[in-house]
Length: 413
Image (cartoon, rainbow, N blue to C red; front, side, top):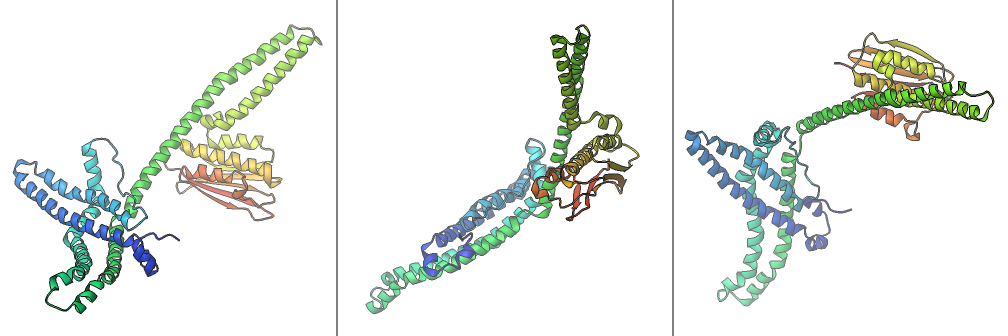
């Protein structure tokens, strides 16, 4: 199993650990932390001083804003530096501004808790962590150096038998120093991850934006479905009706039993079959009855065409939001199709009602049960369709039946 971070590297065999890149990566990480922390101190002091001096001219506010937003730059740099000692990338907690321009970016960043956490991390790093980094690096570098060059400074003041063992201790000191350097680097990165990782509030903001985007997509798809249904209904379907009528009129002009009459009759029958298939296609794209008369009428139409007798109990007194009606309609269509194809049922039932601002929809059958979404019965796609409008799906289908599909969809305006 590959080592993912510096703390895990400490559990490696000593020979493997000392020959790996982890001690040097850790040393580079701590050296960078010390330099960045000290630089941050001077940069923040300069920005604060500039803000105080220029506050008389109002533009000093820019200095204060730059001080606050300095954490964003340090946080981004720290997430990049952490890859030295932690192979798991730390995700960016910031969201994209809702509008272009500097003002929108500033307002977005100042309202995010991630910005203030990064500022807090920057202050902690500058006031405390960078000095600890510098102390660890200093100790790891100075002690082996003193041992290595000690004989030079002690030449003539002590015997050769003492200087040689002291110099020989340098590799041992380097090997020993590798452990505290790596341990502190790993702990330092763990603290940075704890402070800079996205929190639930950041995730919630992104989740809200994702939900809004999904709702916009659902609406856009529904508009497109209605456009396709309208084009098919008003275009291709009307032309097929006209074609069937023209063929019927042509048939009247021909003698019965003639070859031409036979061909025209066959063509008229083919046009009627095509028209029937087109009507089924239109019903699958977006049924006109759903748009004109609502969910109850559309479900009644589906039940009337189902190959299995269907009992209806629809307690819907008014129209529901378009997305809810469309989703519920196709849930019924898919569920009744599954009943006809897989359940061997003799009867089905559909009930629906609105309670507590949610549409409750049940589809039952007396079939053999054992419905399994993993077997490609369309239940997975049905659940995805319901989830797109923040709904939930529950299925009860024990072997031997009966099967109950329960769907709940928020329907508040």
